[in-house]
Length: 309
Length: 107
Image (cartoon, rainbow over all chains, first blue to last red):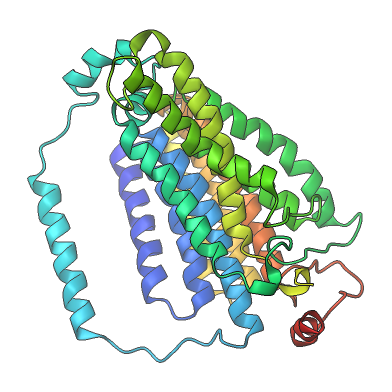
């Protein structure tokens, strides 16, 4: 029975993936990309990696889809949504086939990992949290997570560099307008409270169960986007110092915790066992806020349209 | 009781093939979007059905999917409005022609 279920799921995922790259029309590809993300989330649950499933559901099916839809809307407004004629680029095709073959070979030559590995099981009591994924992300391999949070910030800075000189200091994104009392403005009042609850919940349970700052932050970013797009709140100005402080809070708190670890006798970014639980909680809260605000601003984009004045 | 749940989940998954067909054929953009939303709803149903077998954390994923699928719908409606920031329910959008909007903004 499980075999039939897995086979059906794989068939649907393959169909969605093929339709994304082979179907004609940009909009159809975007739709199949969203569908692909949705189905992948189910597949990750089936593979028993709920942490990855949460990230895929939030980012792959949610935020990336909205980003693509907004980009498509802009293409339509500029009259450029027509797809260029399709030609096969031989070097690119050879490179893609080669990469796929190499990845396939690497996959089959990898040993089957033990979950969780013996070293992790031995070190877990010293981590301060019970979820092994959070323990690895925020304690044993904190270096990677610190750089990831900085990468998000760097992406936002790169996007903001596209702001025109005249727009600097204006509100982010397009000026949103909705019919007062209409379906969309009503929706903007229903979704955010539920989303806030779920986002904070996901970040909070991350210490003991699947979840964490990145997943929770993405849900909170979705809340911020819905609130902004339905006209519930106006996006802040690009120069607002308070919001900039929130943007850097996550990486900054993370760095300070790492330096404190170095000063207290353990190594840089290694949390001493007695305070690890509390330190991870503080880092998670700061990361949650930074990730949420950074992703919201990334999808809203730099100031434009009538916001330019 | 939980013995039956994978069968039901498989049934729901099979109906998603129909939704994929609608996303493929369209013909309107809204048809494709509704097909994708149906896959989202079906995905939530499959996850809820899998939760007793697979572990209750699957419900968290179902919750996240349900929330984020709604976001995609808002994104679609916004992207289809004339200036990319409107609402189809508005009687008279403030600016129907994107070019005049940018001219006003430039001036």
